[in-house]
Every structure is written in structure tokens, then in C-alpha cells.
Length: 456
Ligand code: MG
Image 1 (cartoon, helix red, strand yellow):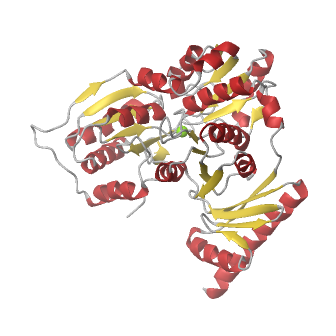
Image 2: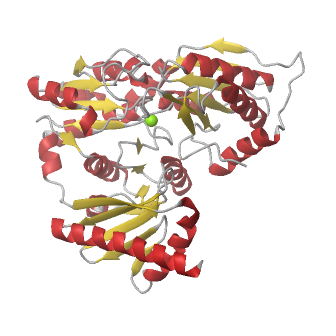
Image 3: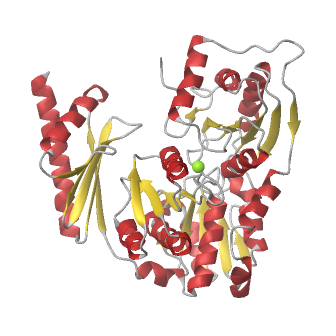
């Protein structure tokens, strides 16, 4: 059976992998998995969204599901709607998140509003591949009705989670760049309601993404960086296409790397609640420094937001997230949430009473060096096994790939989930040491590849 769901749902180029036919089948299989119960449907503003959402809805209804169509909303807004409904079986979200405009995707959400477990995605995949669909009789075919109340409920939920008064008192200027994505319909209004002076960029939802690429990386945000510095704003924020991620720009117009915003938000969460922070094994040790400094602990998981959210749910963690701007606040919901991240960042700045640039500059500094080594997919497992053997006798973490810890740094080597490569991620307090550790990681993979070949 071919695997449909990747780390974050099903993704593909529209008209190639991502077709109306596939959306009907996935909707039908998901509706079968949901046993014909009521579900929500949502999408980001991609041009192919209406085509795929309607096809997905047909599949769901043919399995007997009553569909509540939320229209264009951020993915976390749809997740919040499901979680608070207390009666929906889940949701189907049509989004390709940060991917370029020609892509679209389908994502299944469970009854708690969380990204579906891998086992449940596999159930949907096997229903689809074996054609074991639930077929509703003529009298039980599902209905569909729109509900435009999701954004308001979602923003009410976020406002209830932060100290609005302290943010209002400072009245910061914020440049909001939702990148023409789903965040256009929520984040500028949230910032306004929190008492910010709001300047919005790329603020009209538009699936052609005319303003910038949907992925909020530094190289796509030159416009935002410039506007923040020219308007002397206190903060800039940008989302990906479905607004579950938020990245920040400081008061000097500098892009704040994801490990730094993650560390600042983690520190604030531990100060407020104590407890643990959940993050993948690939996250910078900066987070260990700041969390331990506040008396908290860090739990490491495999890479990917669904496993981070699931681990947080199971362990009762106070905070979690990844370095790509995807952060999770469990008091709000167990999924990445871009608007909530902004609200919490505003609260943090109001409470600390210092500019973001100053807070970032005060964090411990690490040097990071990354590299990729091509490894054919068929040799992936043998290379992984050989790597474990080669690292024997050293301080090793095999949560995801192989991470070797040294007194003055670490190197992680792990297979990519989407490409025929192994990624090397080295980190140390000096650049020279980070370079040396990365070189060692590359060498280890080459040796492991050699061993794999010899034993074949
Ligand atoms: Mg996303």
C-alpha cells in the first residue's frame, strides 16, 4: 500500500497528485473512519481550495457525515472549533500549509482537534486502498451547512488566554504579514483587539499568493523586515499559508531565528506554569539552557508537530514546539497556533518591558552547522543501523536518527522524511567546533554507507 499521509497530511501539486478524484476518496475514507458522524470542513485560500473542499465534502457526505463548512479559516481555528464543539468527530482541512501556490493538501483532524495519530491515518489509508467505504443509504446521506462563527470563537478563546490589559497599556506597534494566507481573516483583528497599532502587509486572503511565498522564512520576508524598521514598529509577525506557524521580526527589523522565539516563549511558559517543555530532538540546546534556568525540564521527541502535540497531551506539558515557528500552548489547544503565538509574544514583551532585540541578544549563543548527504532510500535502514554501531560507546540519543552528545556540542544525523538524504545538524558554542562536529556527522554517514555496501 502506498503511504498517502506525510508528516503533515497529504500534499501534492494540484492536477497531478492532488486531484478532485483523490479528495472525494480521502473524504469518503475519512467519513468511513468517522463512522458517518458530524465533521467540520475548512480550507486555506488556495485557488484550488473550493474544488478540493467540495470534492472532500462529497466524499464525507456519501459516508453519511453531516458537514459544517467553516470556509477559509486558519487550520488552528478549525481545530479549536472541533475541540470546543464536544460533538464533532473531527475535521478535514484543505491546505498545503507553507508549500508554494501550485500545491494543495488534505489534513485530518481528530475529535480533540489534534492532528491525527499515525495509526488513525493508516486506518484511513487502508480504507481507501481497499475500497472499504461506508456507503450511506439515500435517507442517511450527509447534509452540509456553512458556519461563519469559527474565527470569532477562536479569537475570543485566544484573548481569554492572555493578559490583555498589560498589552493594551503598552499599545505596541505591530506589523502583521499573513502573506495573503488564512491568517488574514484573524491575526490583524486579534492584534487590534489586543490594543496594538496594526500595520498589515499582504493582508488580503488570496490563493495566488501575490505578496510573497507562503513559507515564512527570512528570505521571503524582506518586505516585512523593511516595514518594521521604517515604521519603528515594536514587532513584526508573519504566518505560513494556514497560519499555524508564526515567526517574528524584532524592533530593529531583524529576523528572529525560530530557536530564539521558541526559547523566549518556553521560558515565559515555564515561569508561569512550571513543568516540562516538549520539543523534537533536532531543536537547539538553547531551549535546555533557558528552561532549566527556570527550573523546568525538556522532553525530546521525534521530529514533527503531531508527535510533539501528542506527547504534550500525554505528559501534561506546559509548552511545546518546533524551531520553524510552530508552537503549542496546551491551555489553549494541542496544536500549533500562529495567532496564539503572537498573543503570547505580545504578552511576554509587555511583561518583560524590554524590546525584543534586547531579549534575543541576552540569550545564550550557539553556532549551528547543517549539511545533507545523499543516501538512496533502499539503503536508509542499513545506514541507520550502521550509524548506531559506529556511535557505540559514546553518549547517544536514538529518539530520531542518531544524536551524539559531546561536552561542548552535539551532532544529529537523521534520514529526511521526504527526500533521499540524511540531514546533519551540528551545534556548539564556537563556530569551529560546530564545523568539526558537522564534518564528523558527514563522515559517519559515509562510513555507514560503506559498511552497508560491504554487507550487501
Ligand atoms: Mg502550516
